[in-house]
Image 1 (cartoon, rainbow, N blue to C red):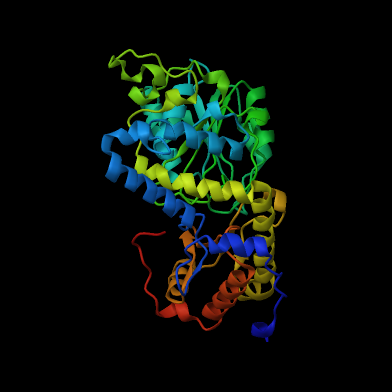
Image 2 (image 1 turned 180 degrees about the horizontal axis):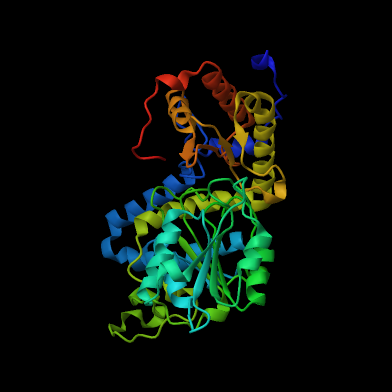
Length: 422
């Protein structure tokens, strides 16, 4: 019987159990949605409580007297995140949201000429990224229909890197790509693609939202021009946590598309002038006053990521997704599920995507059973076994439950929901 087939679970080591104990895993749940919103960890909670306490006792003096000091918090967090992406501290600032940072970076570094005036993206990019790109094109008097060039995935849903490289023609001024494709979990060769863009004289930017905190990056070594990301997935900074922006130091003299007083030289910020000198690093790409309450949890959550170390996180992530794929092959593939995430570790991010015609309703049934996945078009069940808090047992139970739902056709009684998809 299919139900009796199994693969021996790898043993959980003491290190994995320790990190799991630092997170609030909801009672009675298996949480497999950390690539959408990471769980709360105790250090993040403590950091947020400290900021609230400082606000209570210090009031406005928290900007200069709190620990950590609010006035320089964006720079402090930038230095911590720089370690995760292979950049210098001066090249990273934590601020705004991913979309605002993308508009800021593209609006600044996209410099169209008469013959070189197009932006290249993948057709399956996260919708917000494409909306931001179109916004920048319109702001420069260009038509998205004419000046946005899209590379479509192949029949398996994967982006062909050679196809992307061939699409970087002489009229491409800027290339924007994801490090990990949010639907399939495909990991792109960021170094190879960055080199190809540079060879054609194009600016290259990356959306790291589905990779930062989950795997290694070497942005400086790869020669990437800019990158953006969110702070609430694998960085576990909480809902709406501040995003991050990387600007290669060769662009430190660029005038940001959006300027505001928090982008000023810190020593001159309180000159109360509208022509204050801008910061001489990535700090110039800040705009308005930072949202301290949305940044505070990152102080704690990043300390946990740093304690674990990205090499360990990546190694465990691959072990978890390897195990999940092995379970899929044995228990789910015979039931009509299709794996749309690369099996090869070098081409796989931190989540596993399974396709099924009834994916949306299957996700709804899973939630009633205490297993939290997420759904993505078209017909994809995404499962993210996060290194810091998921276990091999979580994977075993999740796959067993998926098999039961499909085998017993439990989804047939569930109406299709068209509301919020998380």
